[in-house]
Length: 393
Image 1 (cartoon, one colour):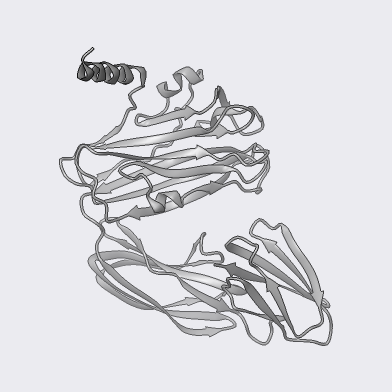
Image 2 (image 1 turned 90 degrees about the vertical axis):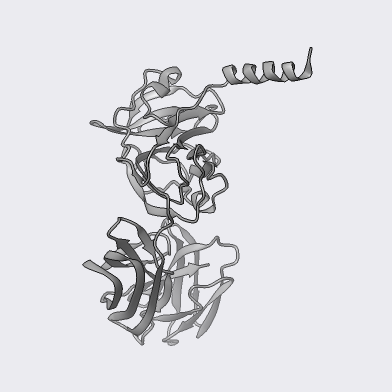
């Protein structure tokens, strides 16, 4: 047989033996889709799962996962689930037994006739059942393959709540800039269940949203600087220069550098320049991470570089911790050496890691075996108990 003809036959054979995945066509820029809520996701079996999943979405499994129906996480059968109740459902999975890795994917086709320069995404992770810290492994596909920002949007389950009580972890809107997704190119996101030992987590994805633009976001210069640090106040100076008019500016604070909450909100700015004093009137004990969120009139969101500030280290503190944030170890300096002090170190889930006591004025805690993240140090001296946040970088 002619070699080229053989190649053509093989190509057609592969084409018709592999399902063609639907894609969401982006026909014009800027593009802003309505939120995908999956409330109609309710296939009768795994074989017709894609009949009720929204257009552009697909599901696959490396094993023989079955569709288990709608549920709230009280059952432990592995497979595809429509997690939720009362018309509020989400695309879910339970990586249990021999179902294999379960993957949900969304795919897009740039059909706009021009290049996509920026994308903004947001969604919710939900957990309906807990057995350990397994969850979702997020990654980009197509033109977004190996995208570091998407790779960092993984989800690890939490022990918060009980089976049947959903816990929502929101992935706030984030923007991928500096892209060059050509016309006719495809791109997307996939979420694959992780499989820790004894995995029995019921997890899902909900409220997905995407925006696309042919230009990168406006250039902004944002400076966030410490003005003063006192027991009852942390004052910062914020200066912003933007090429687009700003709609709002928000000072946000975090104890771990991952989950941020708003402190000061400035709205209806309608200017390209912003300069203001911002105050945290109830500082955390230990360490706090501050950043500024900027929203312009076109709906684009950017963030300043974070500022890590050691807070509340005055004479009322039982101990002084340095350095914080830390890398290899922290030094504990006791303020009152007249009596023994008890220390308990917890992780971010509240699980006790170490417990010790000392009468020394200075004590070293080795942090090298602990992964980067937030920890809490409980200090008890007599009838006084204080709790400090410790950040390992």
